[in-house]
Image 1 (cartoon, rainbow, N blue to C red):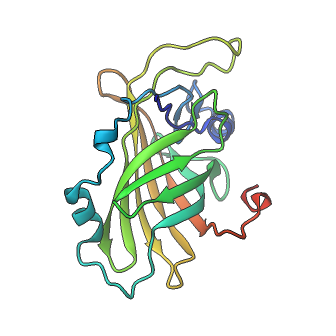
Image 2: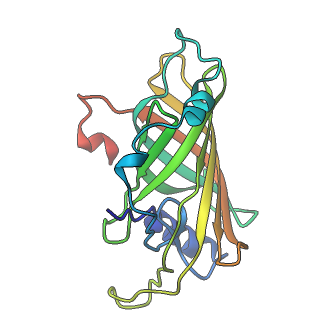
Length: 213
């Protein structure tokens, strides 16, 4: 099964239009709007790595609220390519559903069309009391060109990275933090970057879809 990773095109297009700092819109989990095709899953890889589990739960306090679960996360960019965005309060660049797993891995479903590719993967560790660090390393496929026909596939790209530093609330039902997003070309050079803040609310069996809008 192929997994096509993450895009944030809706918010990033708005950001690019407002700031005029970048000629191409960013997308899907913060990168240029392009499909990602990581390696296929294999049943042999289903077992959790003991090293990942150890990284995630080292020093874990059983009385501490758990980060594990499903979350509604809003990402707001404050800078683009090192410059403040010209919008008071920043620009929302993604509205996502995120699942943190107890094996130290994470998956994000961005508010993008499935055709564009709207899933990305990450790995996390606990860094202190109710504090966590998350690392996304997605592959990406092609540049999205908003001026081209819908069926057009753009030039190939390399990948990107989003890192997050977050703090879980005392009741375990929300978290806040900061993120850094970098997009890389096929030579490993950073061609676009964003920094900003994020906020999340836990999704429960009673959460209606309307709460995500």
